[in-house]
Length: 407
Ligand SMILES: CC(C)(COP(=O)(O)OP(=O)(O)OC[C@H]1O[C@@H](n2cnc3c(N)ncnc32)[C@H](O)[C@@H]1OP(=O)(O)O)[C@@H](O)C(=O)NCCC(=O)NCCSC(=O)C(=O)O
Image (cartoon, rainbow, N blue to C red; front, side):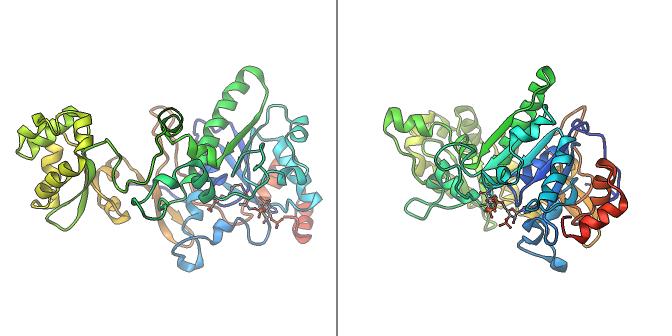
């Protein structure tokens, strides 16, 4: 793990020449800002004065009454307060945006327009501006004006119906998957638009809908229904026709993942199990055979794995070239030498929490890697830098704005 001083100056990342203005809240927009910031973009987050982004209050555990999610999602960002509900705040925001390359927002469609920041108006003074809009359902279509949360997008985008145990309630992933996916697509859109701007000088709108980001992950769901009349259902820990790929018990009382759902790899599993004949057994020899006889095969593997301690089992599987792994908790990640060797976890210094570990910037780029330079900022920490430095407002002007509650 590498340790960074929380006050370290910005590393020069590959996006260091981009200024991003982030408006919005929680995750679906801000995770896009996080990704761009990881690669060095200057991300200026505009927050309502007073409480700021509600993410500052969110979290499962709140030592010192403070969120442990905020320092992660707002890492590398600058915080500026600006009440967008006021004309003065809108004017300030437009002036910051005039000097920006990208705006990321995840308000309800229509809110930005209501605040006098529609794309046509913003690009009058900044024709290269890229406006990245994340929403539940997109900026057009009958559902556009609806308020949208990630959970609804996951439901309508298709993943909820196929997640969970057969006959049980549709389950959610243990994370806000739809929001984060929409942000990843927003980030792809932002970078594509930057690429296009290189040749044309023109910006554009990137419209990332949570339900579509989820839909994009749904593999062959739509043609399966349209062409074959097949409706995917919930199948618990397995995928139909993909076998073996499941959780299996060990003698240590754990469940581990073993996946050997290709003929070659299955042959290696059979050898690791000391039963090389299984690979040629007509019930299991081919992909389709194993799919048909999945339950029987899982029973055979479980009966074998349950007799062996986890460490021994994993050693045999890894030595045999069979994909297998424990189901990690956070503690396992901190203890793991591979995570350490690749610096998958970085440690920052945080004013309240002291040493603060979090995941590193991914993916790894050989020439221009991303970096985690500082945890999420205090509310309005960069007001003076942005309003004084970037907009050139005088000190007493900034003080007067604060006095009136605009910033
Ligand atoms: C999340 C929402 C349903 C919340 O809807 P609303 O409360 O109606 O808010 P709007 O989007 O219209 O934005 C107006 C509010 O923004 C807040 N806001 C934020 N920043 C500012 C600043 N700088 N100034 C003033 N007000 C601000 C403020 O509370 C406003 O509410 P007023 O004070 O009333 O004016 C919607 O934003 C939405 O559909 N967003 C698109 C999809 C999305 O991102 N969903 C959430 C992802 S997180 C998620 O899904 C999850 O956690 O689960």
